[in-house]
Length: 308
Image (cartoon, rainbow, N blue to C red):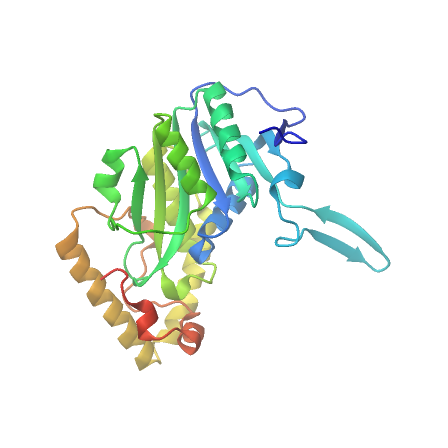
């Protein structure tokens, strides 16, 4: 159906884009446990300095009342109005290899039209592959590598790295719809759902973003340094070690999650997590937010039926 305005415009001074590049998708929204995608978007924009190629129209896609833009008040006047951005950009990894990046907020409206636009743009640029990342909370310990559920058309990635393969109904995101439509079109597409410890789901957990970068590397061959994220993760784990050492309750909870995880991995799958070897926490490290989680955690009935 026709719309009163286009969903996107070409960015001013947009750079030329070579054909055949991989497309990486990172959209914040419903499935962002541990702030993984939010942190990935920040990393891409701050560290890689991508050049916008296509800018999607907020007035068509964004619910301003749900995600209100920030504006700065300086004594007696307003300045620095900062609405969210949803852009397709040309970016380069840490080795200078180019790729396309679709990053920003998940659209609130016009999903079908938005996805159709992305497919049309991708077809015109002859993208070589499509990879997207999101993160969901799971009852798993942070003392084990972050696992993934891999979906899409790349059976090699699913066989190697999909440690949990459910058969279930889930609330969809626009990322799911894009994967579905790309698969229908015969594209080389993969989706990585990061399985983030549920007690860290509402925190900014740097290891989740690192796992997202590693997943993108496995799928595309792109290389991302992530030095700032690694440093943040080391500091995060240093703080939590001090808290867990004095808490028998936290230690028992962690041990229970470890036992369930190890039993599941030993008997239920041949796939392996994508391991970021420089950032695996030790067995007695637990997130500082665990104590807050224990004070507000749901009852046992709410946690049944998940991994293990």
